[in-house]
Image (cartoon, rainbow, N blue to C red):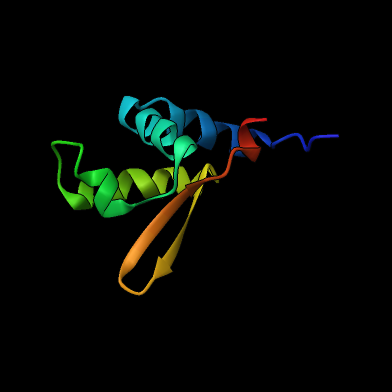
Length: 82
């Protein structure tokens, strides 16, 4: 049986999904793991702005990032959406 998220968790999830850029990032990460740099290359915004979107998605537990040397790789974690 799936775990039911608390109201605070649901608020974070819905807040993260409310932004079109974050939804697009999730869509891309659903297909493959990408570095923050690779994600940022497709948007007309700074790397810092994309990193803020990544932090929002991480706080909602929709993605996780790992560090490989100097590269931060992002991976979607779909469990909160189930």
